[in-house]
Length: 380
Image (cartoon, rainbow, N blue to C red; front, side, top):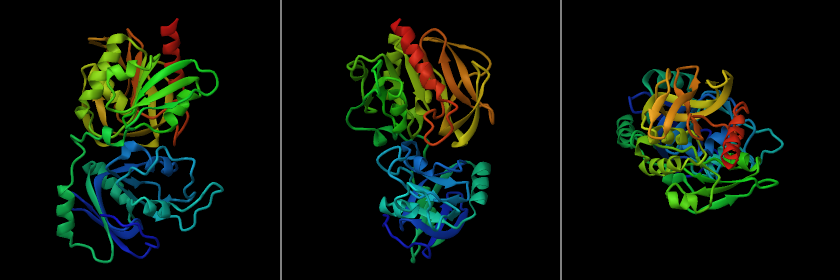
């Protein structure tokens, strides 16, 4: 149970990893205890978008950049209606935020939303530990009366693991809503919300697309009830091996040859729908500076990532599937992880990263134009 508290600078806090490694620091945000999967994000900016990304549900995010909170918190940049991270870890929080859009400090916002954090620890040492040992369960405990180390470690080891977690329905909208096209309406897209970020339908609306955002539980009948020109599958949290319902819906979309675009979790759903497996990465890709090559053009992009699972597909050849041939279209240049899939015989593709640039670079914005081109081609 967490308690929102201001003025936490002198309240002790402890971070406990499931392998027994312990870091001691000070409370940041709410005071109490929280549990999740420890992951690190390499972005030097964009912390507000990171915190409100539903894909971080049940994860404790470690910021590798040492100074966090410098620009405070505004009311324009959240990617959803709330903070989704389970906990937050920073080294040196800003004492005084400074930005013309700032409305309050990050510490205040974390406390207001009941997010337990810790500051004043060596986040570089923690990141190196996670790189060597892999992402693992973690607990943050804060307050003047803390349990003993053995008790805290036992509680961490009782927390649920991310492997096998089915989380998309927990973060998705419960009711369908519509994001209208900006300017002339050209297309209608049905977007399956598996943890969608607010900027994603906005990027489509900028291109004349009316976006109908549907719950994660939407059926194929619900999708086609809006008469879509294309179907979109969003990012989201959890283990893709549990996402049997979205996979079944995507297979129906593929069977009808409707133009299809998936990002992040949607890429993993496409992989499964085509018959590929998925697997958990050792420590994942998170941040806004990940190099990816578009193998269809040879272009290298700097991209925004947030994923702990990946598709297991061959990099060296096209693969025959029940829906035609598919090839790996994008690959991470750090570790050769599959970062995109493209069907060669019908209009469907996906990428493992976030092209909406919130936060992050704009190198991948062309992917929304590629989706528009598929719908134009289908209409023609």
